[in-house]
Amino acid sequence: MKLNYSIKLSAEDHIINITCCVIAFIIFFITLYPIYYSFISSISDGQAAMATQIYFLPVKVTLENYKIVFSEKTLYNSYIVNILRTLIGTITGVFFTSMMAYGISRKELKFRKLYSIIAIITMYFGGGLIPYYLVLRYLHLINTFSVYIIPSLINVFNMLLFMSFFRDLPGAIIESAKIDGAGEFTIFRKIVIPLSKPVLATVALFVGVYHWNDWFTSAYFVTNEKLMTLPTILMRLVNSAEAQEKLNKMMLSSAGVNIGSMKTGPTVNSIRHATMLVSIVPIMMVYPFLQKYFVKGIMVGAIKA
Amino acid sequence: MKNFLKSKSNLLSIKRQMPLQAMVLPGIIVLLIFSYLPMFGIIIAFKDFTIAKGFLGSPWVGLKHFISFFTDSTFIMAMKNTVILSLLRLLICFPAPIIFALILNEIPYLRYKKVVQTSSYFPHFIAYVVVAALWSNLLDPRGLVNNFLIGAGLISKPIEFWTDPGKFRILAIIVDIWKEIGWGAIIYIAAIAGINPELYESAKIDGASRIKQIIYITLPSIASTIAIMFILSIGGLFRGNLDQSYLFGNAFNKQTSYIIEYYVLDMGFKTMRYSFATAVNLFQSLISLVLLVFANWLSGRISGNRIF
Image (tube, rainbow over all chains, first blue to last red; front, side, top):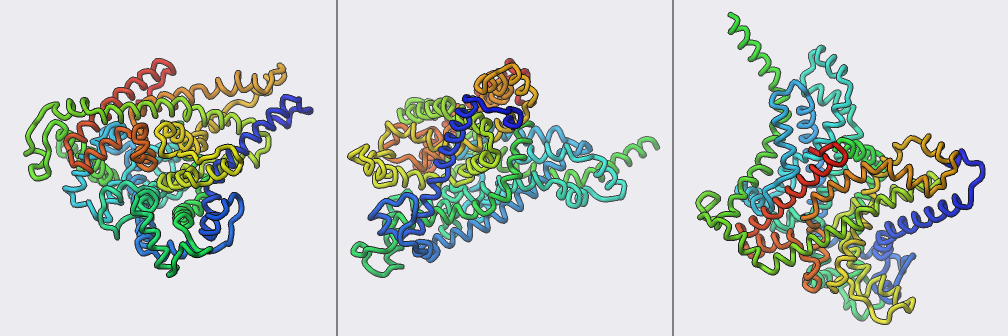
């Protein structure tokens, strides 16, 4: 933008342009290379990748690692649970949060001030982990699928995002709809929601990513393995001591032969990379569509906050 | 008659209120149950709580738990680590996105800038579990980084990155920057985009160099944004990143990686000392609240606008 006005670039301009481009490239490379490395490791033959360190190109390309990941029952199951949790959690979370935000942003609402104070206090103070756990326990939410959904129906930060957006909606449209006899729900559903696509997309992304990535709820509030989510299972595969054993078993059951003596075949490492990729890919797929929205969304939030 | 009319209009307004109230109340109930009930549950910090006796039936013990965690050397270690990690974050992770935003702003090629920017916030959306797996793998004694360094002849023996307590802090900072630099920069990029271009024009006519333009135009223009973000992060000084400490922490680096949140988790779920863990948590929440109020006051003093 500045270039348009300067006829000749000074030496200083050249130096700064080049330096910034180079630094930006280094940041770009460091950001994406670990993910790329994981990708090429996941499609490489495990043994071959262990024999020689790969850097930019996969060796002996194979889908064997992914086959193992998807044939592993616990992992496959957790993937399904994760998808269900993310879908249901995002839809209900966005619905309840946006509805509450709309209600509070209406000036006719009684106790409006009280409601917003109730909401905002929770941003700065909480009961802490153990009392929260005990509440879940008393409500019999421990070890149920609902523990993923119900407590996160409302997110106050997202509610404020919605409110700042709703405040800027043209009030005349809502008024005229009211005169035409439309009820509050109808106005919300037919007028407010369609006008709020950018903020809806932003919040949906935030909520969706939270649900997709959360490992804590599943690790501490769920003990039934059938209800565990992908990150939790992934964590156990990556971090715990038993993981090594489990991964070895997975390999043996799929390969059926003694791994150690073979020159090709998956390794613990290559399976790990495939598992990580399986978790990243859904985010990668929605990312390009949503990224133009969330920059706007976060800016609105930042200005208000 | 007047009264009757009035009560009728009251009734009407209540009837009109109903749909709006119905939209707000489900959310309020969720907050009351999952945020406020736990707040009342804090009383167990002053009791000897057992599940059998319940919230009300358990005996009061006063400040017993507070005294006992203050005399626990593990807690002192956790507190020290939490504060040191937070201060390092404030010192290094806080300015990083600002510098990144400034660098991006100086790039004249829009497409290139856009590509770098868009990809830079991708790691923000990756699960911490995956981030931990990725970096544990890269920095494994037999991982990519060590293999590369050995191959290049820079080291003869693999570096034990994750099991050396002396390296945890710097690695935590590096991973933090990797994950959040792009995301953190968004707000500054937005602030820079809002600067009036005429300022740069007149500066150029006056012969100001690019560096001078950054120092005298760009930086002062985003100073208020920087100040607000800085104040907000003061409120978080007494909190740590549990994901990071939990997923990168191990028996070897515990000395530097163990933080208050992890301590609460261990005390609560490993040893089932519910009251004790709640007391620790309450102490942390209160200190954080004090920090926040202080930051808010500071914000009022400096920029004239408070956060709440």
